Image 1 (cartoon, each protein chain N blue to C red):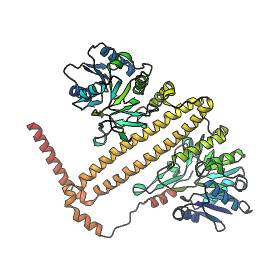
Image 2: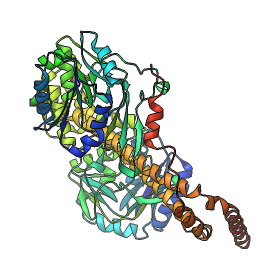
Image 3: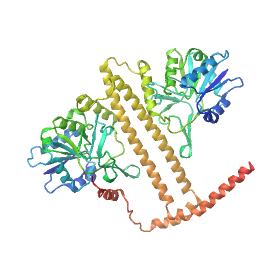
Image 4: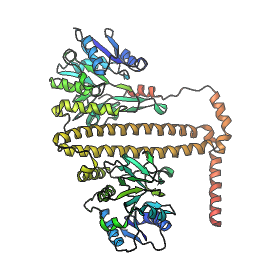
Length: 316
Length: 303
């Protein structure tokens, strides 16, 4: 039996995002555990693990963020195939190698089969590089990785029964990397598989930078060079000075991007104003009014229809 | 006498921006040292300091970046007034307090009416370091922006730019720290200036990072809290690496948000200009455009 669990802080988000995906992929005997959060994600997920650890018929437990939507209807078969190898402990759809910190995206990402669907500015989709395999770069592949993004995480029964999230690490950040490290430390493999998910989230990657930085440090201190975590080139002094310089370079880049974007926005606003204030625009206002009054056809291409068309894209 | 100097790496930029500003600001007896740039920048500036130091009646030396245009007709009077206090070693139009690195704009910025004029996307004008909260002058600061530096005669005769700083960035922080180390104050006053520069403020970020490190190595005892032993450096490295990766993630998020905002406007524009009515009236707009161009030509002929 493949079980599903979610830790829910916002019911509406779960109902809109995770629930449709779980319903899409769950099998008749699947147990679904949508649990109201009982504190940190570490603690809530441990409670879900405890709930399923005694189930003899457990084939896998899939932890799904409340804002993550699994897309592929054959998800359970894909997970089963991955867990056929008894050495596999964890399966996901986004992973990386060469990971040194909780910022796994700074490492060499090998698989990223997800879409970031955002609501800001009229909404949109940002497909990651292996969402559609036909367009994926040469480095995209499924297989063994060092860490997974925890937004959809399938766990083997051994992991469910023997490993726990480290509640000392904080509230949210780093729970997935730490789990992957524990599983690998115990001799099990962490792998990506060919399934896809939609992450319904705002564009802000780190809305709580102080908490995020604290988690980064805690994890680096915990593993302190083991499994590559917290390592870097040069002496501590070299690393400190370089990181401080890199931080300000990143901020400078952000400032420059903002200036450029503001200039583009001003340019577009000028063009829009010139359009809507022109004589021809005002002259043709009745035509537009008539057109708006007429029954409208539904647009053929929406983010959802795009998802649907991409979901039939070629697999590796 | 107030002298002006500029290290000219692009003759056209100096001709278009710095030179008209110097002409506007200078007085009848002002000397202008317009020198071809010698690398590093500190070397060219030191040549100007040598030349200016020989002037007995020197009241100030104004170092102007070729892309910087002084637009303040009262410039010399304001400079004279600020330097009337002998404790003031340097004056500028932008700088900051609590500076920890060459990124002075990340500290507490003090800034006069300084504008940045750019040519991209149809051109425009914004406040310099527009992302930072500006405190208005007059005020003392720790570091000045090197786009415009006004040096007192004492500084001209006693201080020199560090010619070992080869990477081009941070010369202003280094010189500011030297002047402050010699017991002189740095002051921001109300000088009106325009920087004519691209929206890409730094085109060589990797070189900038190296310059940042170099400057931290030289001035760490002044710019940062004392670290002590290797364990202290480890703590600082851990914190810095966490902040770096957060900053990069934030920069990426901001970039995505900005792209989404632009995309939204592009969609709106496309929707408007793709309408049947807009296409229908295209000949009218073409005619109107021709009429405008003809009128402009006529006006040009008359001019």
